[in-house]
Image (cartoon, rainbow, N blue to C red; front, side):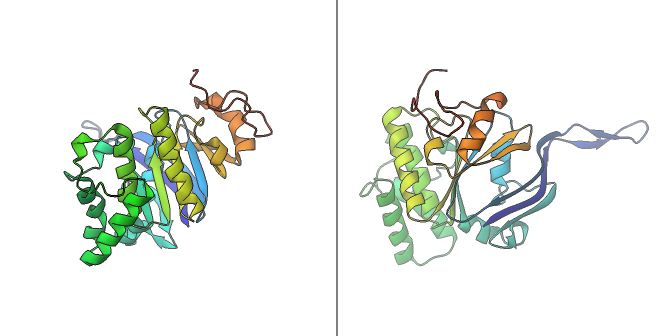
Length: 263
């Protein structure tokens, strides 16, 4: 379980005025007093337009961003008290996998997290093999990262997160820049992990790929939650905050048209 209580995050400076000592706040409010719970095993979509605060919000889940106020807990323990446990329990992939792929080879990158946990070599190898198999890249541990397509890099990033054997897998805009076959491949991997009991959180400005698989949709606007509920209740309101929704998605939650690439 991931739990946020009254979480606020700001970016920028908090300075004192030079002349009269008045406080000058040049910061940007990215997340504004958010309270949220993410149960184990849930497929959650966090939706919002660019700049809505959704990336900042999910990065508080495992301490990549530390809130200015409020508390984030994972499995009952505040993230600030045990970052290692939080990052083992909450795996995360970034919008651009190049921001997190740190090794020259596929196997080396997937092994990076387990190695940092200090696990025995045999256990690391087991996890790497299982994670690569889970993303349909078994036997490609020696491939160079530089030779991979965008979709393959995204799958390696997911494998790296899975090698930590997390309770929750958080993917930030996992379909950006991918063609249709690559999107389908990544989505299949996420659905399989969810079916296997892993909680999945997808962060997106475009619901067309994932809304049919979501248990719940949280809509974010200007750092605040504006809707939180099942897709049938949440989706009809999301186009008003700049989120793409499937054409033909009605109030009953049916996506009659399927995925469309029309704006």
